[in-house]
Length: 191
Image (spheres, rainbow, N blue to C red):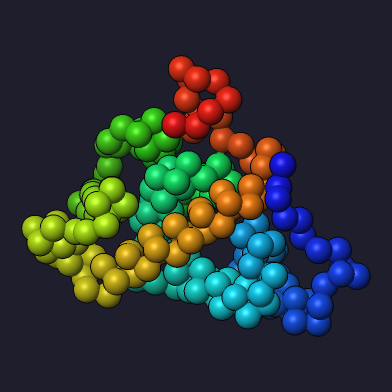
């Protein structure tokens, strides 16, 4: 059960109402789950959702690459809500369902091209080690460009922030629980 709930319309402050209006009039069209927590600091909610909007909708990275990176964060942190939302976006953006299933199972996916492979390898390495070795960095720059590398790291960092927010405050649960993230050896737990 969520630890925080969206304040009712009568409980929202003027600043919270303004932030909610900004996000619902943008490309998301709704208040995303992590904003339920961020609204406790309206300026954090405003800036956080603006950064997310930029990273999700306005980078040099193709939507399928952005969604691949987001899925990597959702899987890394076992963030059910992030995974469930972005699995749907990834499918719509053209990410192969078999690749999504492999990521959910923590197996290396078969990817269609070198750009996707670079995103996967950089995300895996950075999330596991907090660093990217020189040869992988060079491959990332070759495939994505310097701007694309900066954007990829920003997407990963932002969606780690989102995952940690969702997980800490148990937002969107149990409704958005992703069965593919459950550990079959220990039902009721996540791997």
